[in-house]
Amino acid sequence: MNILLGVVSLLLTFSLLIIVEKFFKKEGLFVWVSIATIIANILVCKSIGIFNITTNLGNILFASSFLATDIMSEKYGAKESRKAIILGVVSQVIFVIMTQIGLLYTPAPEDLAQESMKGLFSINLRVSIASIVMYFVSNMADIYIFEKIKEKVPGKLWLRNNVSTMICNSIENYLFSFLAFAGLMDITTILSIATLASVLEIVIAACDTPFLYLSKKLK
Image (cartoon, rainbow, N blue to C red):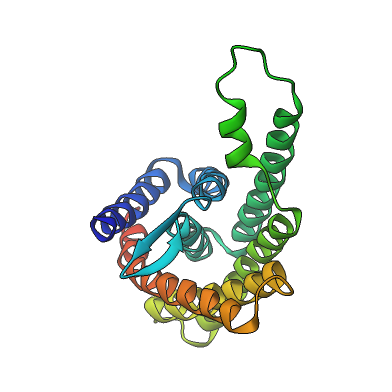
């Protein structure tokens, strides 16, 4: 069931991204990056099993930010892509700040949401900082590599899309895992978590290539 839902989620997420860009152009991509990072940070709280491997929800939405910036770089320029990533970081910071303030309010006696919100929005500061830093670094690196490959091999859209996304997804997973869990878990466990996440996101990255070509064809 999880595999089927994952395939449906992937197709739906990337299709919605293309539709948003079709109707709203680069402004739609700015909005997408912000919304995707916020929703992904909520969904990542839930663990699921795929092929007897435990992973977190949110991978597809996080991956969609790479597709969004690749579309932005290809059609609107690297400067706009960088602006989108900065907007995504700002959105994450605002989300964390406002949810933490919301938890500080004393709930009314009849309130039913506080405990659920605590479970969902209570943060580990170290993990949150690692997540935001690595989101910024990996996406900026993706834009840089994408542009460099485009300069060297201008006719190979699939090459720059896959190489930049796969490399930066892997960098993000390994560095995040070490920043977030070093000292809390042994090296073997950290490497296992990072490797499994990287493999999953490499598969997702390969699946986004047709959507990038579709976006380029849509004027």
